[in-house]
Length: 113
Image (cartoon, rainbow, N blue to C red; front, side, top):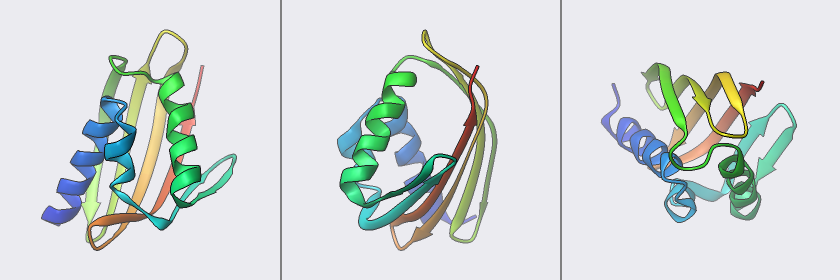
């Protein structure tokens, strides 16, 4: 397991759970890309907007369950479930590709009820 990838991933997940946008943005670069079923999010400004929207659906304190976490080299995959007052997500997945100590590429997909 790549310790640096594990550390960055854990930093990202803790910041996400805390809805801490400043800390989340530290994990990305101006060239980072997030790919979603709704399209591509590029650069820090768009990434900030993406997470602001996600935090509305899954605010701090929402139920979150990690179903799977796999790290191979510079790639991490997680499968998860979450529930808040506004949405239930029985299945979500993220894949992260790291370059150095940053997330360069990130895919996100979830099924919402």
